[in-house]
Amino acid sequence: MTIELVDGKAGTMHISSEDKAIIHQAKFSKSDVVYDWGDALKCSMSSSNRATIGTGCASIQGLDWHITSAESVTISNGSQGMKRNDIICAHYHRDSKTGNENVALTVLKGTPNATAAADPTIPSGKILSGAVDAYMPLWRIPLDGITVGTPVRLFTPRGALWDSVTLERQIWHGPYGMTVHLAKVGMMAFAFGNTSFTYNINANGQTVNETMAAGFLPEGEGTILLEGVNGQHGALSFDSDGKVTISGSMNSGYYFRVCGCWPVK
Image 1 (spheres, rainbow, N blue to C red):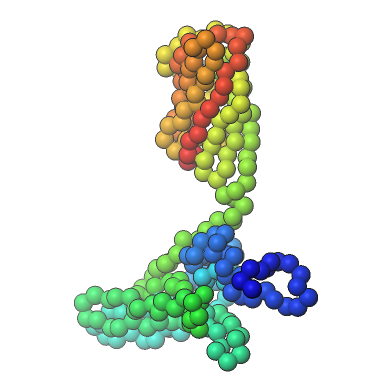
Image 2 (image 1 turned 180 degrees about the horizontal axis):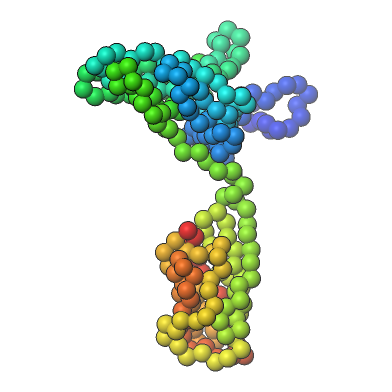
């Protein structure tokens, strides 16, 4: 069978690392990921030959792994008058006989060069295609002669997934007695629903006292459109500092449809 209920009971152990990798890649991405947890795999040089990687959680091609206590790797001595880049990687390996899998830190040593250092080639094995080895680059260690430089991070820690999918809602009290329903998902904000005014409005870019809610400030400029009956319509505009202006001809006693969408800063 090529169809499988991965999370369902089957009467026998049937969930494999391949199942896990397929679902993880489909949900989140095929890219390697380092999460913003623990020390986020921070690297420090405890000596000229010793690099220490802090705690962290990551995923290599959909397979999750973590470090719960700092790990160290050895950096080979540099050569006088030569430059070199070494790359600290997470190395996935599957034993071809037993099928057992593990992840360990390893150092891919670069080729010394008198003028300019280059990164060593990162092997490109694909786990889901059957590769028994795969590498996830984490840090570059530059060497100039026998001097070890500052480690260079090769990834950007990703915040918790919850931060990008949680729905945040708020009722914003705007000018002239209006209220607007706001919602935010990740880095996008939305205005929706219906609203009305307590006073008649006839304005063209009038600055009002009210400011946009702090958590919904736009990256550049945001706009909320207001559509009513009998050709009445208007708009609210606001900048990244929260300053709000209103335009349009709108009378009290009517409902106006609210519509808006903008990226937040």
